[in-house]
Amino acid sequence: MEYSNIHSLIYISLIAASLHLLHTILISPKLTIVSNNHQFVKVKRAAPLPLRFRSDGTFKILQVADMHYGNGKLTRCRDVTESEFEFCSDLNTTQFLQKMIRLENPDFVAFTGDNIFGSSATDAAESLFQVFDPVIKSGIPWAAVLGNHDQESTMTREELMSFLSLMDFSLSQTFPSPEDGSISSQVPKIDGFGNYNLGVWGAPGSNFANSSVLNLYFLDSGDRAVVDGVRTYGWIKESQLDWLRRVSVKVQEQKLETDESASSPSMAFFHIPIPEIRQGPFTSIVGQYQEYVACSIVNSRVLETLVSMGDVKAVFIGHDHKNDFCGNLRGVWFCYGGGFGYHGYGVAGWSRRARVILAELGKGEQSWGGVQRIKTWKRLDDEMVSKIDEQIIWERRGA
Ligand SMILES: *[C@@H]1O[C@H](CO)[C@@H](O)[C@H](O)[C@H]1NC(C)=O
Ligand SMILES: *[C@@H]1O[C@H](CO)[C@@H](O)[C@H](O)[C@H]1NC(C)=O
Image 1: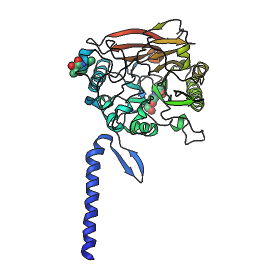
Image 2: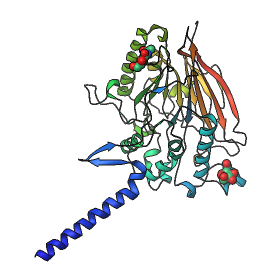
Image 3: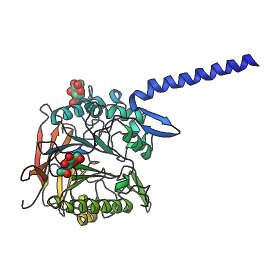
Image 4: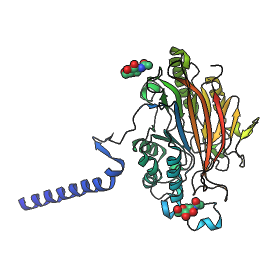
């Protein structure tokens, strides 16, 4: 009796020790989360908050659309030339991200969905660790939304967003923060995972050092849906637009208090284009329009909402890898990132690419003021990492 008790005690201790060791070796170094009464407590390396402009009056965002990551070096490239195919894998996507971060040295990186290509990713967590490794190593704050392919592996959309929000230097959120109307307050539940708002504060030492002068909205545009028996893509739901309107009012009220920045701009990031982009017409576009816009058959009046809100000057999307243009619809710019990842479809011989967004502050009487101008351009993954299609997408009138 006694002997068997001691025996089982030793046995249980051994199991506990092995589990602890396994946890330490396999999980902790990567995600650094600890379990505490079934609640996950973050001990991740946090990005310094808030985001803010540099003392040279600029804030630069790198937009990365559609990395379509699978299993790393085992996952082959799609739509590359015959001579490129043999030595091409997901690692080329990794190299391109490293190159972009080194060259542009952005203040923030926004990933607009299809970060992983679920059906090629054996283990979603492993693919996420691999695909975000370059941005995490850089220590630059980043955030992501989901596309329509991310959840096709071993994690649901909610699990993916929670995971993304726990990764080092990530500012991704599964739900909006309480001050922006989270689901925990009286606000009704918002559809989707990955709806949140990030403010970028003014330059240090300026009148706007302690307030947001630029707002970044992130929205979950869903994956797929069946509407009246027709298979189609997801769309941004009324509950999300409702949340967006409320945050926008709040943001603009705060700005009225500090009058000079009354018309401070916002930008939005999501994955799937809205139907108006397909319908056009654009007076002029900058960049390539070489693929039919793959949007939902449901028009949930996103454009209508953005126009009536007034603060959103530009929207950055992905999804259609062969489109990389910016076009203006009723005063709002819609810009594609252009396909980034080598496992995503594309056009052989047409370089994978990324978009850069630069916001510049105006000079006040003594120090930096609010945002004066927003520019964008793209970089190609060619030998020169060529910079193309630079344009101004917003400029403060008057002043
Ligand atoms: C992919 O990376 C390999 C190794 O660095 C390189 O030799 C090859 O040219 C790259 N392919 C493309 C299409 O960029
Ligand atoms: C911002 O906050 C800091 C620290 O509280 C303070 O010293 C500074 O005066 C504030 N600046 C403005 C413009 O309100």
